[in-house]
Image 1: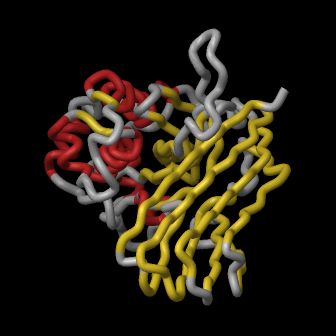
Image 2: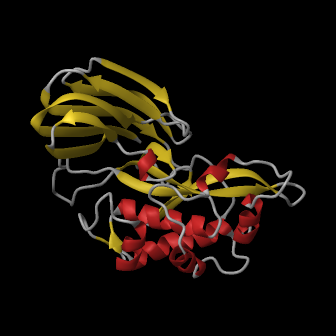
Length: 306
């Protein structure tokens, strides 16, 4: 599937900003499930300096500095992506290892082999490991249940029990509060699922990106009417010929839409960035001098190209 993504961010400041340093995750990278054919970021006013590099999670990071006084800032990211579903044919959910075996695989023991997925086991800025999340997860992670079967079941449970309510939460809303209310947006559902998995000792990471949405029959697609999306990836170790666990695959879980798949939930998804939680992948952040009051407008368009 060929998708064109436009992510338009606009800030208005009062009083003017005198100087600013910004950091953006707005350029997707090519993965097994997608090929980036074109990607660019346009910044106005023009930065005095900018550069790009990869962070520890393989995300493309754009840094730019504005040295002149400005009352507005426009950041427009445009990408042309060719996506592909069914990238990896991994084991069936019922054939994956028992979740307790995976927990033990990642429990620290002397002389054990290090697995890079261990980085996604711990507390992070938006993820607190609390007994409430453990209790929530254990309803699905019963004794000896295969890890992916249980993780998909928990994903479906969030989809069924929680209500998607636009603007019911903001970036500062703790996952524990969203768990108690049983409502939120995709970011909240992702954080709840990650916190639940990590609280029982299983690695999980946060994925930011986009999903193609279709307008109602007979209506035109709205330009700027889409939004960024968030979902989760859980690590599923493989079983070697000796029956021991070893390096495996990441499987994506989308509790907002009840979708899952190895590396991607489907070809209508675009992977933008990954990290421990939202703090690692926020689209724009930075430091400004001035601009005590500001307004932010974001418009996202995901357009299929025939």
